Every structure is written in structure tokens, then in C-alpha cells.
Length: 327
Image 1 (spheres, helix red, strand yellow):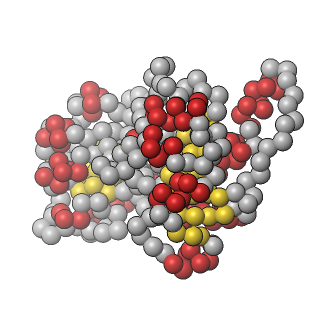
Image 2: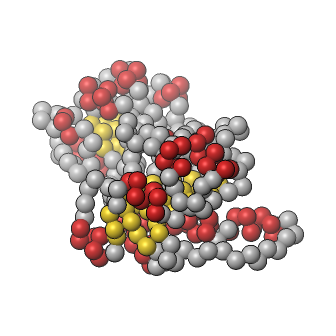
């Protein structure tokens, strides 16, 4: 009987249709103990025996692939795959998949929640009232303000729809164009430099790659409009945190809303933790009850498709494996 290791701690030992999909296809789910992403040491005992992995925050290195001779598929619950060494996966002929179309609504909701919390000063007002204070200082509205979206995939487009309902002006940067969507929602395409300089809010919706790593650096932040805000619900590695701290203390930024960090959970000495103008959430943008269920079911279905020699092309990252690949 083939086995599949359940990586995401929210799915371990949890009932759900995803589990039925696996067992009905003849898989034995393996649920490790613990309440966090599996570390290297926690993965090691399972690698020699597993045929598939449903992955959350697990990091798969060339060393770990070499220790998993039976591994045929890794199904990520989400759309990012920067924690998986893709060259090693392809070398070992392990098909890596993502779950497109399952979590963009959740990420968009969290993006807007962070944006509104920054604009309306909700966390600071809440803390002040709990401490006995009462400050009715006026704030700038979001209506009429410019939201710059860097990345216009499923998530960027989902954010655009919501921001438009708040009567925000929308500008975007992406190498992929969708003229019909842009016309429908009144989105202007700008160069990255133009977007950074003209936006009141800049929201990141690009994957973490060698090209995008550290893109939000001192130079990027210096070009942002005075009094503007940065929102990151994508990947922590996009932002140079020391440079962001400097921009938040000495300008030009008024604040930042961050669902992701370079190290998660953050170390106590993280350079951003003590700043009052930063709002954090614990990398939960893509996971609410509905999106988690849909991601789990798609990941399980992808593993079953591959096991039964069906190639789910829209979900596989390393498409170069298709010719000649077999379980």
C-alpha cells in the first residue's frame, strides 16, 4: 500500500474529504505528531518509506530528496513552492504540484483587512482604549487613494476587485497582461518605478524567485510616496527587513501590514517587532477554513491522479517530467 505523509499541521489527524480521497485510492495517510511545519529532523524518519507528501511549510532540500527513494509526488497546499528545491525534485523525478484557484479569495480578504487596519488605525486605537485612552483623531480615507498591485495573477486580481469596491484607484505592474480585466476594473498598467512612486498603498503579489528576492530594498522604499504603506501577503523574502525598518522609522513609509516574514515565527530580536506602525498576522492569509479544505482536497486529488497515471497539467510545476513519467 502506498503511503502519503501529511505535512500541514492543520491537516494532521484531521478528518476531511481529502483523507477519503487518499484512502479510497489505496493510500495510507501518515500523520506525524506536532503543531508546526515538519523540520528536517522530523522528516528524516519518514523519508525512506513515503510515496507522496502533502506539503505545507516543509523545506525539501537535495539531501532530503536523496533519502526518499520511493517518493514520487509532492503536492503543495498553496501556490508557492520556494521551499522545494525544484532542480533536485526534477532530478529525482518527483512531480511537484500546487493548488491554483483555491486560496486567492482568502489572501485577498487578508490583504484588504491589513490595508483597512492600517488606514483606520484599528490596532493602535484598540490598544489605547484598552489602556484607558480615547483618541478620535481623523484619518485619511481609502476611497480615492491609489493601490499599486505588484503581480496580477489570481491573487492580485482578487485584491483588485475588492479594492475597487472601496473606490480606490488601481495601478498594477506585471509582465503578464490582461487587457479585458484591466478595462473592466479601471486598472492602469505602469512600470514598476512609476507604480512605486505614485501609490499610496503598495501590495506584493509575486512569487519568491531569484529575481524577486529582496526586491523591496532601500532603493525601492526610498522611491515610495511619503506617507505611503506597504502590504506583503506573499513571501517574507521579497522584503529586506532592515531596510523596511529604516523606511518606517525615518520615512517615507507611514506603516506596513505583514502576513509574512523572513523567519517564521520571528525571532525575539526581529528588527520590525517593536515598531508601532507595523501590523502583523501569522502567515495565515491563504488559509481559512474553506481554502484549507479546498487546498487539501486538490492536493490529495493530484496525488491520486498521478498514481493512476493521469497528468494534471495545470497543477504540476516541473512539466518537463511529463514525457515518460510514471508512478
